[in-house]
Image 1 (tube, rainbow over the protein chains, first blue to last red):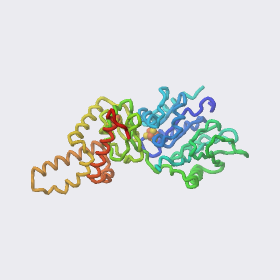
Image 2 (image 1 turned 180 degrees about the vertical axis):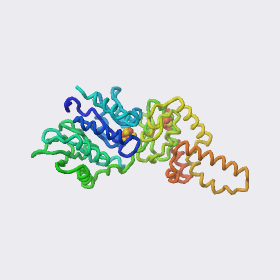
Image 3 (image 1 turned 180 degrees about the horizontal axis):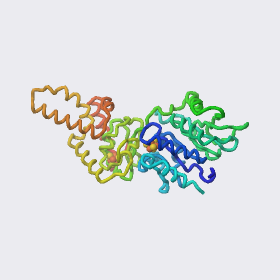
Image 4 (image 1 turned 120 degrees about the vertical axis):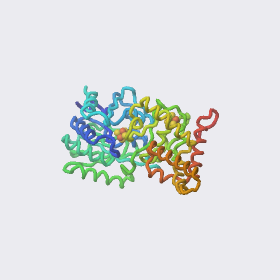
Length: 114
Length: 282
Ligand code: SF4
Ligand code: SF4
């Protein structure tokens, strides 16, 4: 797996300022992404980025095949729309509030292969 | 200036040409430590993949060889060698740049605010009429909008309870469906009941909640009927406060009843203007 096959197609949200995402799930997902030696964006709080209308939100939303590890997909899609950059249909949102870490990682990395 | 407008410090853990690779466990430790302190981190292996806002300061962390890699992308870049220093020391070095660049202190605000699910929203403007803190606004094309996110009262999900369509989410809320989970038909029924309660109270919920302590002082009234009526109303309000999950601090920080009424009238007028066919939206 190299950077050229997966240019920043993965976004990991650390939900640093609330305890809604289980700590062990976040830690395991981040560990495994780090171990995979791929390029990815890790943000402390996607909610805050949306409120700030961070220009990277638009860049991410425009990335084909984007995979996001955060929380409920309806909320994440709402955050992108609120920032003026709705997510494409093919964007996949993995929910670290309800899914197990191996499932989240598998879905994130499956899309980066090839 | 809103706290959402300032310069941000963000970091890049760079392992591309000109910087030696980092062990996976160390990589994870550094990223986790930075994220915990509110700094975004991009794990990068090529300088060409970096995008940033012009106002941002980007700190490139790496085990650099003699000449630093080329990041000529039109924004401020700082290089921070990380050879021989541990994750807390890296965080400390990045934190130092906050003062130097007058950047926003990461984590100073818990990002808590409503997010609208436009696939459900009918643009009825009840949320705009209800919120006393100017969180909501109306776009040029007369669509309801969350405009001043940082005016929202942390941990208060009350406006989501007045939305008849269950279209308002608070992603950091504990319970479904306000946290963004799917909306069930049971949720729809419950929400409809809550709207009925607010209608019963005349729609002036905040003023009544604020008024509760004033009413409580008259509980020694000789008039038994009055007393009973007050008790009933207090019970109703207590239940409403619980149902809406309004934190006690938010109630305690509400303005006076008169101010609330004035605010509510202003908000209602804005909502009406937005919905009226011929009027200009402010
Ligand atoms: S998007 Fe979800 S996971 Fe990320 S900060 Fe917001 S609530 Fe937390
Ligand atoms: S109350 Fe709900 S449906 Fe009405 S405008 Fe607000 S978000 Fe939309």
